[in-house]
Image 1 (tube, rainbow, N blue to C red):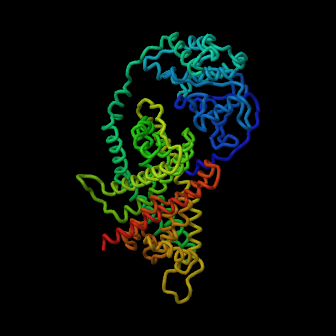
Image 2: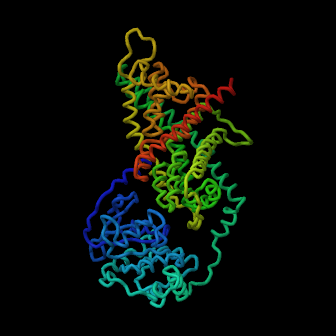
Image 3: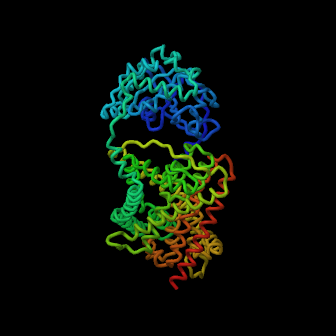
Length: 636
């Protein structure tokens, strides 16, 4: 997920034509409408001076008028509680640095929940900004028996209303036609003047609440809606006892599938890479070129590529759970657990994102209103087991944990993998608990978040997500992993083996000397010089540790073993305590330099990245030391 860092470059855009802004609650379909209006004419950067992502695009009205369109971060009100919401408020008020105030606001409303979304329209009108309303998700509202008369709604709130279904493109042409009407670019008269802010004794919120109630009464939508199928499902999935048990079962089955489903495609990739290495060895003459191709490219890159099936299976389950609407329920179920360590369930979504990569997880903390909670979530996000760790776990588990069924049919390797994920989660909770005891402002705020309705996952969206994940992984294999693998091969191959030397050539190279020097530091935790050497390029990306081991052991092996898979090589040369110690290291060690760079951007300085690196390296060394010594004692 390092691609997220590409979006972080701050750009300064100068006004060029009328500016429109899309405003709406989270999950109202605002971004889907933005994509329909702008197509491919989009660019992503940051707002000047802050690390909140901005999306800007261009659209043409029905008459061909070119317009700029900003997709503002989702917000529930114009009283900001988080960095995301503050940016939206600053842009609408004309306080955003490097950006002019919008000439027109398109308020996107969720037609299935007018009671909540109408308040934002009233708040935007109060700012004196011209606005129109895109009444979105009207198809879903109709299926639920919520029939909204767009003309009546327009008359009640005093602004034009267009019915839209952004996911299907319905209403987009009508909205573009509306933008050609001169009158929509003028501020509308204040609707419901008898309920304006000046006459409301409780202020704007009481005024808006009363106005929304009156609007719903005029539309005959103030009655209580019948229970939806999602409500009946939630009675089971959100039950205080059954809910957490079902969540644990879902996670358990996920990690079982990562190993059991991936075995056949993994074997095919291993066989293909072994065949490719043998063919290259047979076709190329002995020398540095054959070593580069076989020991550098094939052994290094192939050692990482073999874990693609397991990564795709993991993300298949995550995408299905996200598409179905279950993930926010998981945050709700874990709210009490998070509260025990000084956080709220709102931290769950950023932490869950960190299972893919810590960088988007760290960026997702911008939605957390409490600064202290946001900082703590950032600091523990790298302890979530990201997808880059999965190849390392799979390699070591495959080499040292037998493939057999235990406890009546459960895959032992899947149980070990689940245990590693749980250790990372428990470690993160322990760090959060310590920070709760030693930091101020640790009072937990009640969790308030929207629970979307359940629906069947869209196969097209799931397949697109898997394709993107595969493309990202392969791009990294062909990019940074390939470059560092070749660099490590060069360091491992030069200078050459001296005359009369009896060991492998790599032992006399620059990499060999560096590995032996590092081995003195890591010897107390059971690491040999090959492991110590592989940890260095692994700081750039966790998967590189696997390709580095593949290159090092290919160069260390004899000619007859050069094309052998990495798993049996380490199974023969490492002890079980060494493997367990390395697993403990990867549970806690800092993920990559890009993660530390993301922390620096989000916290605005070097202090927090340095603190993070120090405590994670300390935890990793301590955990590996205890694991190695204890396992050695137990096996002696």
